[in-house]
Length: 253
Image (spheres, one colour):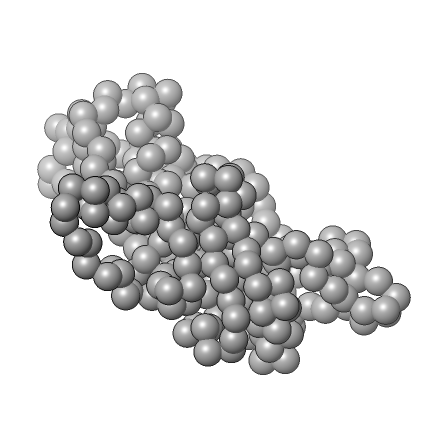
């Protein structure tokens, strides 16, 4: 029976470590938060990386901090900033992941355990990098072309979607993660697609509103970053795609 799987890029020990970190919050004394902590005079800071998008972090983190006794002041998703009493947080996209920097503004500054307790709320660490298998990627692209249209089911009842008609639509394609279970492989992928191949309801509604107000919105030409999930089931006749859906979709800036 053929098992469709990317080459292993982690040792068993490392893979178990990544799984454990993704499944539970970082402990205050654990790396990398503790390793990234620095303190000098009245300043103290640390940072962690997360697999969540910047918008997701800015949306969920203030609520979690409030549950941990932090008094919130403001959150600005467009700027990637969160401010609270005694705490400034910067959220920024770095190499396909999100870096969340926590800076203490209290006097005296927060100690390592305190900042790392806040940092543990930022979200699961990024998935370990996966070796890119050219044959697997070609198979995935062909399967997506056969399916043609994939949607983001939990947002707008499928109004966020991408229609893939040819190999030329794939401006970029990377396998970012793999979860294997008996009889099934679940891949996470990141694609860059033409804007003309994608529907993004928030942007399309904004453009429509401009038209209703007598203004013509500038054509959107920036490529779109699509993160998606592809599920393959393994049977005696070989692996076949059973589901493909969008996790997130947004125009590049």
